[in-house]
Image (cartoon, rainbow, N blue to C red):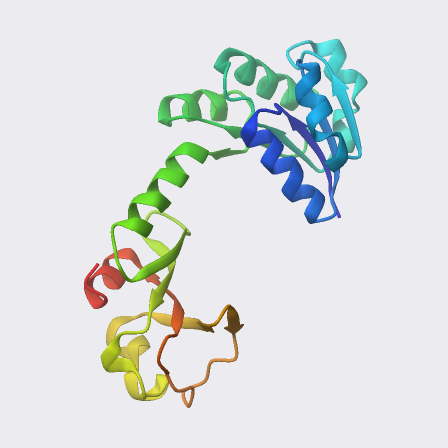
Length: 215
């Protein structure tokens, strides 16, 4: 369990708060707007109404006591930048800040952010890849070149074993799991046989996945 300071409680911040609650982390939530703070109270350990660009206010929160600080401000980049900088100056261990693009990311990284998240870009990429193909059911980007795809088992693979297909040797792809009727099977061996109506989680380079599955 981690202690998390979450600053900015718009839709993105609220979803983060709800997920951290599900994961049983301790969360201190902060926003300037009272109604936003009230909305997340069921999901956080504590909450404060305040201006995160005010150094005295941030100091009062005990920044050094948090394992992680998330700056989820999306409607005021100047405030996000100032907050990120102040958090680092006050001794924050790890600062993760939201950016809408590369320019914002550069400024945030130069002013204290340790990591950057691009919620709009990441969701846009997922949507484009997910819905532009009839065979992709999910997609997780690991870096610019590698991803995990949930892909329908091709018709000509049905009835064959993982060993017979040997896609790791032929295409440098790894079948990490098989999924059927909502149940995930992670115990994949060379003797695992593909069956009808399955999807599989495949790890590899984007180029190889696109080539093998004609995406």
